[in-house]
Amino acid sequence: MRIEWSLDEPVRSACRTDYGIGVIGSGFIVKECHLPAYRGSGYRVLGVASRRYDNAKSVADAYGLPAYASIEALLDDPCVDIVDIAVPPHAQLELIREAARRGKHILAQKPIAQDLSQAREIVDICRKAGVKLAVNQNGRYDPAIRAAKSFLDQGYLGKPVMATIELRFKPHWQEFQLEYDRLMFLFMSIHHLDQFRYLFGMPERLYASSAPHPDGLFKGEYLGTYTMEYASGMIASAWDDGFTWDPPSFGVTYKIEGTEGVVKMNIGWPRGGPSEISLYSRKLGDVWYTPQLAGSWFPGAFGCTMGELMRYVETGEEPAISGRGNLPTMALVEACYLSSRQKRVVSLAELWQEE
Image (tube, rainbow, N blue to C red):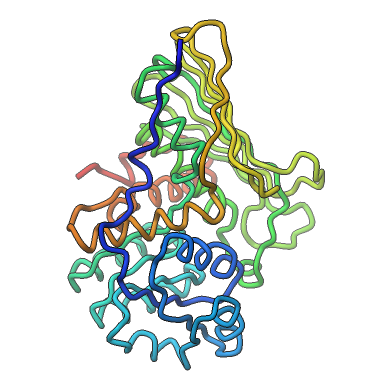
């Protein structure tokens, strides 16, 4: 029996791709992910700005782009329709406020804010200004994640029973993160929480536990675990370990088990290889299927998030990664901190009510 599956839904490119994009930020993620993805998608990037002009110029030069003299110069450019903000969450609020005041549409880096309250404030700012806001929650656009969603939707796994994600990696934290009280859940787990939410929706309850770096090098938690219970009875759980010193174990692995089948996958990170997925389903016979996946998480998924925003701007059709749509993911992050701090199970109804 031949497996049938489709990835048509994910890469919803905009009908128009000629919006003028101004990029704020000059770090690794801009140089290695944003700009190559936009070039590959044929998007029109007008230039790069950063707090330090020399940093902006270095990144811009690598792609044959101009560097703005300042962030204000980029925001004041009437040719810029969309501002791509790729800065730490503590710096996003004011930049978003200024971009929205000038009528610019915004793709904000994830996490969009330091906490749920600030995320709600940002969403409200953009709503009142009448500008479209999307969040660069790119993990849900990885080809393996999209394929898994397709398999689930087509019933190959039957009723989902348990899903797990295991991260083993020594993160290259940036200097600003040394002073953050929130670390692993906010910067790394947010990917997995959003992927769980994309695949299965919002859970009813969550229990999280975390621990600091054993040498006390960081203020925030350095590793964390969380288990989520769904109304269906399904359990989703993750182990996000930033301490491991064993390079051969570095990576992220996923497993989804259902009443009719199982999916195993990895997203090719950090080794840089392609994403991989294997499916076993009793509906397909006693065979493991390992389809070849097109595209990549880094940098390919970054073209998808910008494409979603451009489609939002053109059609008004709100994507799942809109600012408002991202609030439930921020609620899951908040629940992790509340649960870990108070050592108790948190009902998501305490933090989030579906509109």
